[in-house]
Every structure is written in C-alpha cells, then in structure tokens.
Length: 402
Image 1: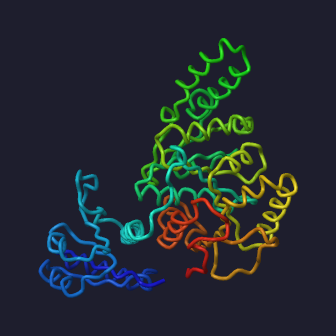
Image 2 (image 1 turned 30 degrees about the vertical axis):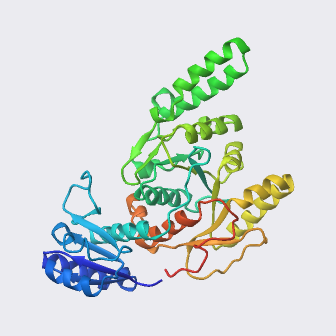
Image 3 (image 1 turned 45 degrees about the vertical axis):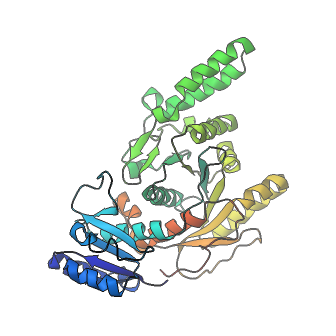
C-alpha cells in the first residue's frame, strides 16, 4: 500500500515533535509520510507549490490559509481541543489531545472515509440493509469484527444497529452492559411482544386486527434500544437466560429482522450470529442481504466450513445458491500466508483481516476497537464486502501487509 502523504499543521512545536517522533518509531512508519508546519504563511506557500497531498491535519488558524488553494481531492481534518459537535463545521473534526495511537487511528479513518468510494448501503425498498456475521466454528472473532464494522460505518455517518442473536451474548463486555432477564430486560420484553403477536395471529379473525395493532404499538424497536458511544451503534442489552434465545423460532426471527429493517431508524443492521445451526441462525442467514462468513487459517475451521456448505447444498440447492451469491468468505487472524486452503471449490476467499499480536492477552475490551491496521482492513470490508454480489469479487481480495 502506498504511504499516506500527511501534513501536520500546529503552532505548538513541541506537539509536532512528539507526533513526528511517534510516527517514526511506530507501526505507522511504513504507512504514513508526514510534513509539518508551525506557521500558517509557510503552509500556504507550500500548498501553492504542492497542491496535491492526501491528508491535512491542522489547527483552526491554519485552515483559512488553505481553504482556496488545495486540490479538491485532498482530505482536511480540523484538530480541535474539545468540542467535536460544533454546528456547521466545514471540516471533519478530531480531538487534538488524545493518545497518539488513537489520534493516528482517527486521522486515518477520516482519510479512508472520505477517499474510498462510498459503500453501497442504499436501502432496499426503503428498508435498512441486513448484514450477517457468521462462522462454522466458535471463537473466531465474529463479535470483534462486527463491532469494528459498526464503528467504521458509524464514523461514516451511517445509522447502525448491532443485533446479537447468540445464545450466550458476549457483546456486553464491550458495552459495559450486565446481562439481565425477565421484565427488567428490554430485549426480553420485545421477544415477549413478538410471541404475543404470533399467538394473536392464530386466534379468531375478528380479534386479530386489533391485536396486531396493539403489537405494532408495543413493538417499536426504538423504544427498547441502548446506545454505545464507542461504536456509535445502537443495540439491545444482553439477555441473561439462554432459554429465551433458544426459544426463538423462525417466525420470531423473521419478525424481529423485518421490524428492525422497517422501523426507519437505521441504514444497516449488523447481525452477530453463533456457529450453531439453530433455526434463528439459519433464518437470519436466509433473510440477510449480505453475509460476512469468517474463517481462519487452520484445519478445523476450513474442514467445518466445508461440511456446513456441503450439508446445506445437499439439503436445498436453490437456497444454497442464493446464500452463496451474497456471502463473502473472509479469513480472520491472517498472518501473511495461507497454510490451509479451502477444501471445496464453492468457498472462495474474498479478503483477509490481520492477526493483531497485542490482542493475545487483552484486559480491556476497548483495545479491540483501536487497532489502526485492523480498522483499515475492516473499513475496506465495509466498503466492498457488504454489498450484493458473488462471494468471489471485490476490492478487498488480496494479500495484506501485517
């Protein structure tokens, strides 16, 4: 990958020195080339001579000097001390004072967001797009990938809902949410109303319409959501009792996904599924518009994926073909070279997400959302891998440097 040509403009020479020193000694040394300026006039003169650059990160006083002189393809980020929610701001704003790894990650995300072609997340017939995350084996990193995708889409301004349908929901450790059950859990209340609606549908026709109206009023997804500021996504709080998830039927799953897609509050629904063949997982895969199917470079993962695909193909070739057309097979924890290859010809690898050594022993889950290399590749997946199409094409399919 070509290095990003970055310009840093700050009146604080010590700030510049710390920034430059960090870039030179970090993983960004081979990814970013930085020029620095501490005087607006000097920056203005440079841009008049060299109007083409990738990214300018500048304090507010410097921006007036470049407003009219830069090339339209340049990405400009305003470094601010605190208020990121200023109404009417012309430039993307990033906090100036934060850990340097976080700052670099934010700057590169802003660059990628504006430079990479817009993700095809147009609503289908006015509905939010549903993207499922699945794997034939557990512990492969579906939740981490899904939440990083939620963060990247949120940074792009997409309205994202993260929907975890695992029997044992692990997302609470990211959100700081303690699993609850019964009437104290909003998601459990939602499932109750769905089942009440299905019971109403089986009752007499004279009462059915009134009961459906009651259900529709009670089952407004926006009433039951929580919000996570780190990923900028909404979600349902985890349910404590596994039985409540195990009792979800095909009808329950379809109702939930359709109402989420139709509620008008979101552009994309990210569905985090477990590896089992429970009917809610199979139904969600069938209902989703796109599937991100994670695997990894080991014998077990490849073998189980092949078994799953062969079983589905033998069960219903038409449904299998439809699923394959919307599936992207992605290798997670990729170490630069594949040792194990897919056993079947139907499993074509679309892309790779890098192994992050620092995640081997993590004691704070927020660190799983802050890897610049991982976020860059997830953003590429978001930009190309969540649209409709076959599972063999797209811009992410290549070897990556880790």
